[in-house]
Image 1 (cartoon, rainbow, N blue to C red):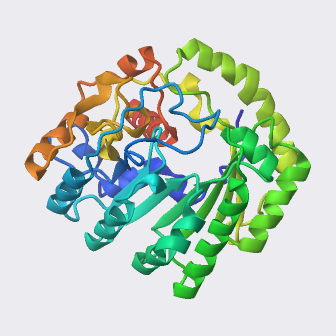
Image 2: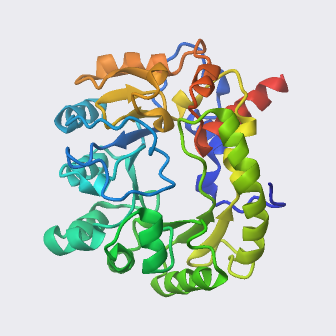
Length: 378
């Protein structure tokens, strides 16, 4: 399924990022030393009633248990105590939409107060409305300090019609999202070019025509976000691996070949182009590669989940995967440091995840396979 050249921007080279975070000293891994991870994954609990306002057929959390716990005040206190030890705070969700949450801007302001960078993963539906009612985008660009901060919008369509089909909705959110992206880009340019604005496009049967691909590329060339990333949706989390392998052979392999040909005329020739239009092939989350015996992902991130618990990783942040749950989100740094140590233990067996249908995300897979390869060379 591979491509000849790795065309990913440097912020997608996760093993390199982890090595840098560890100061180049891999002996720190499994040494028993407390190492604050490179990033928090923070899954805010929707609006406490609804986890998300869309019903995407490709949502990775679609099959997972989806409880919502109003833990925000406790988590804000915890982040304040931890201070500047974790340099990135990434807001998204295994099954939640962060823009629904009334505390979201409080979290973002605290992130910047602590000297950390933020990353936002959203469907983008409320960007325009929040700007109109609360000046939300304006506040976001005011607190951003460099391109390490980013706003990533999962658009996944080039027209209203395909957007409605793919997202399981009837209202024309597509037009509002496009306008929200435009406002975000315009506002950040007025302020100095921060944060980065990224757009993601998952290609499925509804939105994969050459005509629609050309439409979205032209729209983005007009708006000029930093990047437009195309990829094929992965199979849902929580499925038996044999079913996922069947999906790979039935969907990922043939569509990858077709899509590479369709996208070729539209992809950027240089990462200096704005937007940088690129394709991320499915090899970067190939289920066949999930066979390693150790998990070092706890050195890269740890997750505050929407159910009010701490999990070893973001892709398993649901009661569906109790084996990766570490405990309730604490209110003090000391208890949280103990949880970090539990997430960084060599005793954890990734096969327990795989047996339950828990798969690695791209970051965890690349890091753990890279770690396995480094150990094999010793």
